[in-house]
Length: 195
Length: 195
Ligand code: HEM
Ligand code: HEM
Image (cartoon, rainbow over all chains, first blue to last red; front, side, top):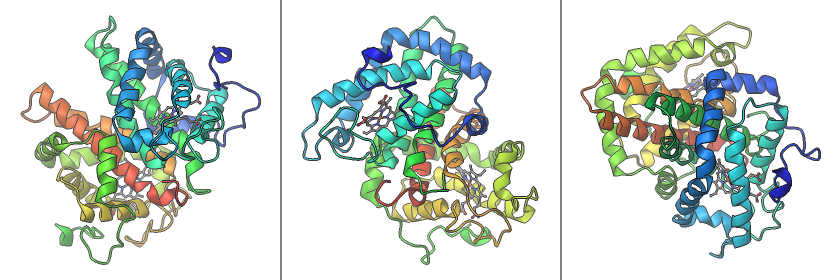
């Protein structure tokens, strides 16, 4: 998969080591009440979501596209979206749904979380795709997106063969994982020592 | 209420103006899909939660108390919790549930969000209560707590006279508001210009 998706560098040896390790991860997982039941629920969620990935991405891209102050981050700052950039990121976003649903998470996964975080900031944004777009995504929207990225997944989880109780378990596992990941992605934004 | 709760300074003229205004708030509300229906649902939630505030706080304090790496922030860093500090913060935490359920949110509310954010950081932590505790709450746990503070409220929302659909609406309004507030609280943590 890695070779097929431009710019998808999960597991790549050239990536920097994340400034957090598996011990940090365990403590964060305790803070979001993430346990082995959630890992199992996420793997099930992965099966339910796989055939719906394009629909999910349509919904998310439509939401971003409907808000000038959000689609802004895919533009040159003067109203011109970089279409190739939008497409290339979309493919990696789809793969990220798969990766989210493929725990347990380990140091290699943490290293790619760090990379994803940096790709949202002025340190690394645009570089992967040689994009012609504004240089930084403000932390406020990265964190705020925990809501839409969590809430919108529920209807897709309901489209499987699972009971209401199982859907609820998958939804909560997804919510925990999104909160955990966005938390990890904010590290490059925060003042030294404060994260 | 303000006079009765030590250190609760909502609306106090000595508070600094927040570095975000109502226009920023509107854009963030769009990002979390927060609208007037959510304001109404939160006001209903306030009525359901009011008689249960002590129980909610018991649950949250038990959760923090059960995790050494979380209760740490109420200690001197050597395992000794500051009990008076825990108590005084608890009273303000209860009032915060009421304030969360009392939208619409305005500039005065934003100013207090900024104050709450700062009180979690080395800029302002401990000062309100003259507490003898570690000097800073790491951003990672502030953001991670979106999950437990959201998920645990649901059972309390179910204890009212509301239909399953209304409970769901109150739950989502709460989830949006928590995400919004934690987003605002992270401003003092983030590098200049990056928030
Ligand atoms: C919960 C919040 C978010 C999630 C889950 C998310 C997910 C992702 C993923 C998976 C990628 C590709 C990572 C890779 O290169 O492999 C990505 C990149 C990107 N995202 Fe986000 N994102 C979030 C918030 C935002 C927000 C708020 C914006 C702005 C509206 C945004 C805009 C972008 C852009 C422009 C890129 C490309 C960055 C680059 O130049 O490499 N994202 N995001
Ligand atoms: C969703 C996340 C959180 C919420 C909703 C929340 C809520 C609050 C509220 C309402 C206050 C009192 C504000 C006031 O002074 O009026 C407060 C203060 C405090 N919180 Fe949090 N909090 C969160 C995360 C955390 C975390 C992760 C910790 C550490 C385990 C923590 C520890 C404290 C402490 C020590 C204070 C007192 C700060 C001071 O010295 O003034 N909070 N919090």
